[in-house]
Image (tube, rainbow, N blue to C red; front, side, top):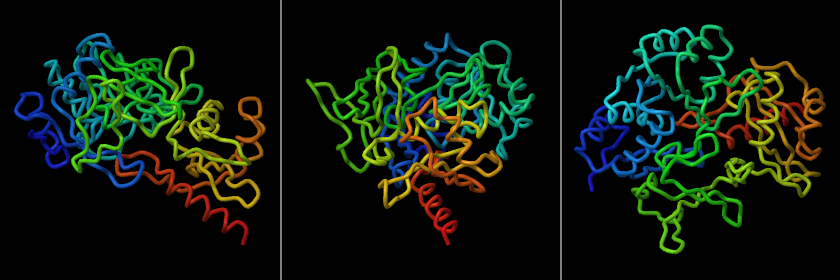
Length: 349
């Protein structure tokens, strides 16, 4: 089969998928768990993902591309527009600001309008009157892995969950797309099967793919649970912090902090990590971009006591000029943990 490499010439590869000239795409993962890998995604899975998304959102519409097309999230924006023969507006390259986004949003033709953003972009826009007005122009704003504080979530936001191996987001606001099925394994890891599953990795590694009763599933590295009939993602299994024999899910702590009426900001501005501790094994530490807060960890703990158990309350707060990120733009928790360890070590000397 012929898989066009997305990173080499994104727009050409996207066009080849829309026209049916290739069998699929070879797409690099985000690198959130180490070095990026190339995932082989069939044209059939891509089409299934695109049309399922458009159907879930209420029908075809114009799209604004504000993400890199070399990644699956950005590529899917252009593919959805192409497959449904709808206008695609491409935001010019450069710094992402409310002003630049508003200019691009104003160029999207009238009618149904859609955009896909990462949490950090949404948080920046929601901090600006101009940004909020621009977001309101869209019928839906797809946001992957978002955790918003009070007033930070746009009314038209749709929180998505997925990965390159599932052709991007395949669960919208906790509900799987049509022809996608989600299950929780005995170890609390999320299992996904259905029409949007990728064919595999280009290196031939099949360890992430399991077969039960003839059905092929992706055994993800993410933990989840059912809450009110919807999937709640608890973060990656290797991110769990063991402190004093208790398990702490960083994502749960981040969501609780994000809900503190913008005291620190959304999840895109902070990371909760575990740092080695002689007494507790690991201690819960919040790493936050320095421009976002002047809070003390004591204030933070006091505000969170009614929301989190005592063992999950942060024991330290570390500020950084900027949060370390992977090539795909996600927060690099491993690097953030190293940064926190170094900062706390300097404090003690």
